[in-house]
Length: 222
Image (cartoon, rainbow, N blue to C red):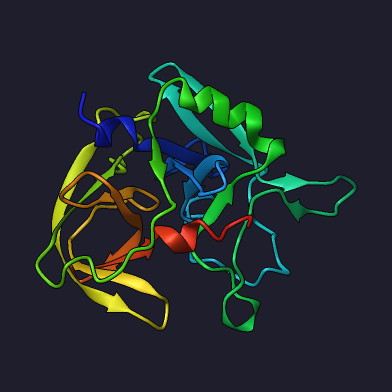
């Protein structure tokens, strides 16, 4: 089994209609040694992230697949009595909008992380992503496509999409690449030619992929 297929984790959230919102995640380790699950913040609701003061419509948990027959529940919120405080780490964007990334890091997720580490590899988040050698660098995203049509989740095996690095948008910052992905790849790890992690895919528009650099992910929960 190749490294990438041991890195990508199928994740999903029940949508209340007997089906699932499908996405991908992976385990990352920060420079301080803490490891945890990372995925896109639109996976739980299948919608772009909203204001961080409004968590209505979010499920209580997401699922991370351990095997074709076993999944583990990952809690999204703390608190009871109608008060919902996110258990996951997040970054607020402009206007308190939730940036499209979430990290499950810290002691409250230790048992989840240990369980996932029994099955999956852990990517290093410690090194800074620079220019990546300029345009044309090959990138590969590993993910679990949403097959739709009531297909059973989790799906296996993972698939890959290849692309080319085109630059870094400093306003994000966000890695940009010529890469046409599929629904379900959101939150998936994007690897460089040497097998190291470039970042996490959050989507693409007309074949132009948006990838959160690994050093930005390392800020979650930090």
